[in-house]
Image (tube, rainbow, N blue to C red; front, side, top):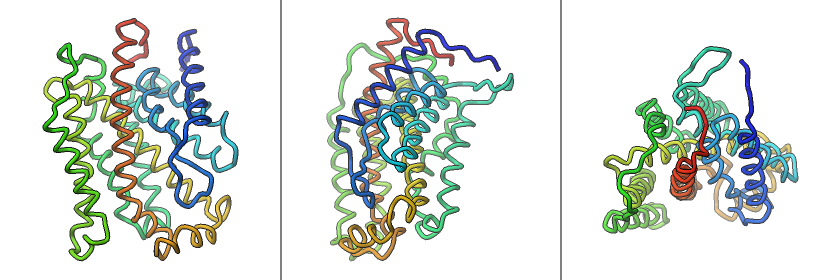
Length: 316
């Protein structure tokens, strides 16, 4: 397959790679539990946007370069591939076909294959087998891809947001915030007296996040916004799962298990690493929903602006 890069493609890759490097280097991140000195950087929010703007493969390249340039350890070199995979999945979901050596494959099929393999990878690890409910966010994304298939790509290609004014729906926004607060309360120790309550927190977080996205953009005919939101979410959780797998597989290589046990498991009263992952589910849920909301807001605005300026030329 002949692959050509235009001057505009090169410019976008350079701009996005530089943007990632700046964000990684100068913006504080979210500490990674169990890895002293490492953070979840906010390029995780930007990476799916790269895939949406310049396509899955150039987006992958831009995010990867930005991560590698700023990597300061073997662990961060490996985790540089996480946002790159995010850009790849988001880009594939919004691309009708991926042309490989003349063979056209549906973009959503490749996206679901990548996410499915990552979920399978979780269950092939000893940690994953002892924390089987951890990938609930990732399985939800996989199910959404299978349910919507190429609808996201069709809506993205149409690229229209109905209405000229951005109107926030205050009541759904309030309801969404209340649901998130209730979901957080269900994770607290006092709710554990009723066995089922902690498990209800997970669907509550998901519902609350979706209600907030609805309040910001509405649903109705705004399928373009939903396409950006779905692609961003699936990219972000692909990033998350790859990061989890890297973390698990470098324990006692780059990360000492004894350090994790002494400084993270013992203070929380957790017996092992699988319990740590289960403990982190509510935190991960809030984090990934917020990342999706921010990526959706930034992505919609940037993509519409580039289209109006006739600068969005990726093949759909």
